[in-house]
Amino acid sequence: MTKDWNARTKMVHAGSRRSQYGEVSESIFMTQGFVYDSAEAAEARFVEVGDDEFIYARYGNPTVRMFEDRISAIEGAEDAFATASGMAAVNGALMSILKSGDHVVSSRALFGSCLYILEEVLRRFGVEVTFVDGADLAQWRAAVRKDTTVVFLESVSNPTLEVVDLKSVAEIAHAVGATVIVDNVFATPVFSRAIEFGADVVVYSATKHIDGQGRCLGGVVLGKKDYVRGPLETYLKHTGGSMSPFNAWVMLKGLETLDLRVRAQAHSAEVIAKALEGHEKLERVLFPFLDSHPHQAIAKAQFEKCGTVLSIDLKGGKDAAFKFLNALEICIISNNLGDAKSIVTHPATTTHQRLPDDQKVLLGISPGLVRVSIGIEDTNDLLSDILNALDAV
Ligand SMILES: *Cc1c(COP(=O)(O)O)cnc(C)c1O
Image 1 (cartoon, rainbow, N blue to C red):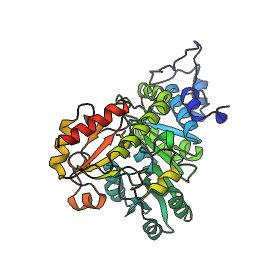
Image 2 (image 1 turned 90 degrees about the vertical axis):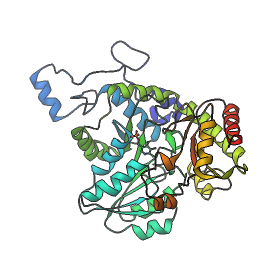
Image 3 (image 1 turned 180 degrees about the vertical axis):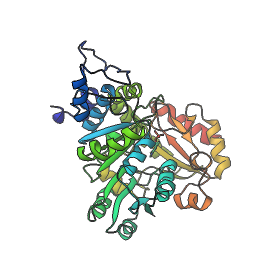
Image 4 (image 1 turned 45 degrees about the vertical axis):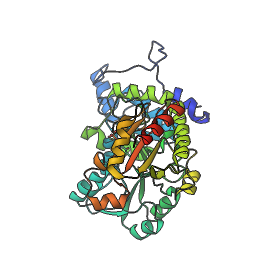
């Protein structure tokens, strides 16, 4: 039945499990463990866990399972495992299937903590990692080898919004039997078609658009059942990165309004990006649907809308960027994204501060770059706020 529903209906209803009380809003099963009717029942459950049976909250919980089933239905994935944060999801997706001696190819433009896992943790355990410019297919072709086991990428990169040609990269990876893992935060579950375009595993930080209201950390890994309930679940349930039932409930409530929020945010982001392009105080406006963006064609083929974030590069470097940030009245200075509140970030001095200068140059993180995550406020109010702050520079 769920299969025939459109995404917006699934976001409200898919995966719901009602207790004997017939509650309308999903219950929070705030319990660590579960009671067995008999010693024999306990023994049987450790042999095989039925669909409505649970053992321990680190292994699974009814509220968490509702969230996993709902996001699987939305994404068109066979199954999902929910995690304590987006980084627990990225770490679990990789560590559950990699071993010493494996080869990984990854795009270079990654979220800082993802870069730490690929560059430092995996290498420490004898996994060889080759980094490529995600937008350059020739580099992917040259880097992928017969012994490549995993290809990792962010479908839209942070903060410069480069778009990877997922279909082509997946073809290159699958030709050698590699697993394609996509960190899909910027695409959002609303506009994602990652599985259709060849991703084997899709990862979200639920902290971003899925909560979308700044409350909880969370993450989720989606993929085929034999991967999710096989190596992934085994790794995560024993290493402790599972999602709390309370956070799963917040994320379930977030999914109910996800489509409404993200479409409104994406609409404003596009209007604002277009209005800002060519502004005298700006070096460039980065937004994949703009005619000036080098990956516009791929973005339009892959996404119905290209997300809720844009980046602007101010003339005058850090000074100008800081004057702009400090003059904003609606947009708040923080480092999250996908929130109902519009958030501005200066990557060079915050999220990407740790990177050496040559890496910043390579990734396009210039001193004047400001990432703007557009919220659900009125579009015209946001545009006025940004234009007024630019005037103050
Ligand atoms: C935020 C983010 C993460 C990490 O998610 P947390 O929930 O903060 O752990 C990973 N990848 C991308 C692209 C992100 O934006």
